[in-house]
Length: 507
Image (cartoon, rainbow, N blue to C red; front, side):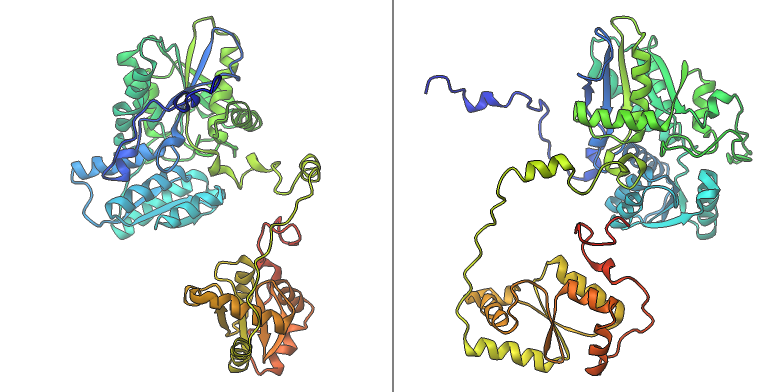
């Protein structure tokens, strides 16, 4: 037909890179894209590019560090097969190490201050790691001290990210060359990076000094924890450990940016002349730019990335035409869901969203037609309810069914479960036959449906409310069912947190 484009021409923004086959997740680390900002650059003729490290398999630049320190240790026979690995981390290094150790078969323990985002510790535990939490008042130095204690006590391999030369080495081998290769013939005038462990800065800068010596290197730090700006150095013992925390450090919002000491790798980068400028940003500005990256560029980064780009934008406002800036975006915004970055992002619909929703009828989908009720299926339901003191008729993966399971587990109540949608009842539509029989008895179409001593008493919300109103307790006692009378929790804690009616939703 005239006027129609070929389907092969429709996709304009196609990734030019090939889809590669990998023998291990570890070979997917690195080669992250360098992306131009099209709407946030404040001045014509000044281009800002961001190296999106969220493209690493575990979503941060620290995947490089994790791979580097382990393979360096293996090559130099510093680690034994099956030896436990330990590190003090604000989260991203820990997550990277959990991934690398899982792939290579090393047990892993992360030491992390309790103040860092909850999703970080959950990710590590999901990857099979152990997470030891330290007192937030003990700061980053307390994490390192605890890590050293545990490593010495148990003979574990301490990756020691703040002073391990392999941390800088991996960035000299990968991050730096990737940047200069991606820029090609375009002159890289300025490079912006937060200092963190000092590894990304030192390794990338060492490469830039050799290949692009005219590039100015800008080191970013929090404006309320300006350790480098203060001019006060961190003193180190002969074994590489710092003597005491830095006196200028204060709590800040830029997770992973600045511990309460100047890492050895950072000190070495400064002494080598790798830092041309130290710039500063506050937590509020970092969060504002992180949101702008998401909403104006479609780039999902955290407070860390927002902070670096904020510094770059301020610099770009007065930079001459022809300036080309590269910023390291250290991680993904998903690392910050439980932090102040997302504090103003609502879970419920806004007034505008409700208005959009109300603009159409919200017609429900058609319901299924249940089979006719038969005596044998009714008998099966009644027999199950008589055979067991507590029976929960359930759907296998229903969150409301999990609610009543969670409550009964907390109460120590034994119960029988019949999942009407289980595979064993699929043939001949048997599960729906039981469902039809059940509905004829209870007059209820939703799940779960719970019986105590053969009597139907309700579903998940009913159980929670009746426990709080002390109506459930006498039902259990009358049936001779033992339960934990010491339970003092709130029964609503087991309801799905997405329910707008759940009174514990915001907790």
